[in-house]
Length: 267
Image (cartoon, rainbow, N blue to C red; front, side, top):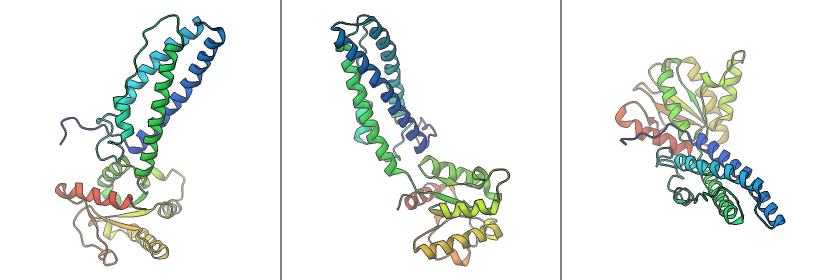
């Protein structure tokens, strides 16, 4: 176990941050190009451009520092597919030399920053493309309300790895039709995870949800129902032919999680 735990950031949260970083690059670049054009028009440095450049350069230096932190192993653990990508390595190694110039500012100072922004933007686009490929399929968590705590923990881990997890407490709002929302959740999710425990196998709600998903599985001709063993129990007859992900004890939980992720990573 690492002495320095990773921050609990999901793949989607990192993706959102990198998208914002691209927008910041898109904001800075035209301002710098406009200042460069103004200097070229006047054939000499401009105090106005100098003031703007000093402000934006200070911002960009701080931006790069924070971006590298968001690309560090603290935020991007090894289990993310893009963690060791060339684009990540390029950005971690990228250095921008702060000009340190107050006035006047000319193209000798602006061009290196423009070049750096263009490089950073290109690498971020490659990272986002990789993240898009790494995102997992969606899963509806079918479970007994008595198992809510364990299911919530599992849902958080799957979300962090890039899955869209449908959990009734998060998806059903006050005033919604519970049956309609659950039916919609099952139909719109790629998979239905049946969380098995002594309580869930006796739940009428769970049985109805599994029956609906199994019907959909037969109609589609591909896997829809994914059994997940939360606690040892008498597995229902109609699920015994399916391999389950064992999430019932600490010593098997990591492998069980990887089994679920492997299934959700398939098309």
